[in-house]
Length: 147
Image 1 (cartoon, rainbow, N blue to C red):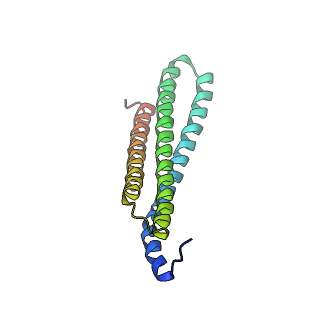
Image 2 (cartoon, helix red, strand yellow):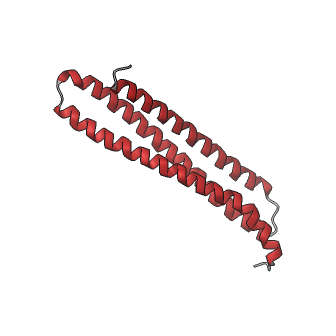
Image 3 (cartoon, one colour):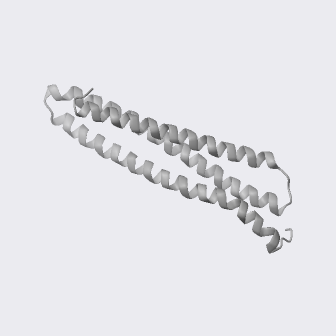
């Protein structure tokens, strides 16, 4: 194992701070997304009970809402998957930063690829999150009879 002094180690820590902050931010996004998924599941269960007990004229509106909730659950699940991939790539990036610095490796391409993968996963997650929000507004219009 190479001998690294504190003065050589501090810049490595400074470089790793950015990805660590990214982990914190994406973690908060994941918290929000899992809360939304929980609400979708709770609402679906409620509407499923309503569907079993409802009159035939209410069934169509409830079925439309259940279809929208199913789409939302799929969108949120994908958003969570992409956000998780972003976090995994960020954690891997931090490890690679330390290993390349400790071993004096100059493999910039691996760092670039990990960072781009992290950002692309985050972008995909946020796009899916926005799509979920749009679906929730469609469900609101259906529920209020504004469709």
